[in-house]
Length: 421
Figure 1 (cartoon, one colour):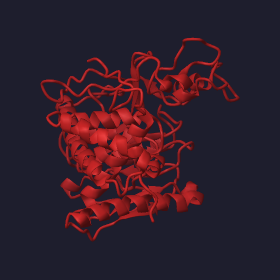
Figure 2 (cartoon, rainbow, N blue to C red):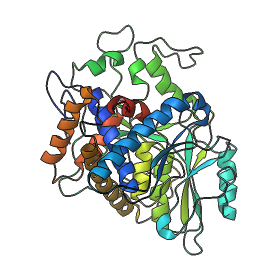
Figure 3 (spheres, rainbow, N blue to C red):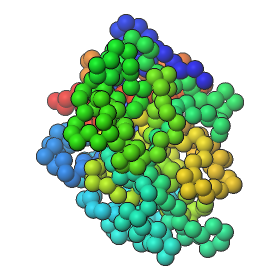
Figure 4 (cartoon, rainbow, N blue to C red):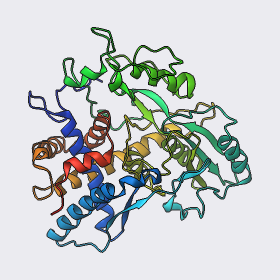
């Protein structure tokens, strides 16, 4: 499937600004997601990493902007809620602590302790191996390992893991299929875009780091000591360390004609939990010390909630080049006969939720709440969604595209929404 090679994610003109468009897309997604709960009098809480306590005031102000925009919009449309959007602290990090997807549709509840979850006997044995680093897994930036505890009493009763974040190529052939036409095409900045400038490798004239790679914008910088990979620039150093030092599995080697994507451990665990049955619970286990937030990023949260597995904590940090799976992925070689259908169904429900949230959020971003320099991008988003109203995969694709313009969701929201008066 060909990429959209437009100047912006939403527009194709000399005035297109993909960074501003990414701001608006992700802010609309965050606001729309939160509003879908608040309108039903269910409060939503966005958490900050406890190690970032010094930024608490700024973070609380960002969340207050979201709350005000939602409450004002709902009140204007005679749906004034009792619920609110609140700011909080994510649970403290400790080795082996977990982020949990609570399967509400099966009557599950959040664990009493994320530091010592209640597990099956088999699950406890595997959890301890993952926690203690006895199994091969990624341990670098954002190192949370997917794990499924299995409480089934018939059929497959084995837990699953480790399933750490892995890198893939996009578009991975969508053999599960969104519909007979396939999903909306992904966006890749055209040659000559200003976005490629920081991806030009140091001391080269035409060698660019592929789009989507984490750290790709540091290609013009010198490596950081100790440079055990002997990379010639910071971007390649980050990528090589992820694989050779920190253990991330790379599925395919991207070129500047590809988009790199990363599927997080929790997402992998949810597909597997669904394939195994409702007596299974997906977790992410903290296994590194580079990233310490015990909370799910916004793109993971949207996917999890769409499946009935809302996370125990939501973070407004970075979901850099996040993506779902498009085909079964079993690094341990153990597959289930229904996995392809599970991926198809879960991706369909995620896409449907993305369409609802993005459309709702775009409507909430009215002139009274959106920053003046983001209004044009808001208008283009509404036009784009309207012109693709029959394609329910467009909204999810826009979110994936925006996530390749790497930034924290908190910073995006802060730039997009007006300061409170």
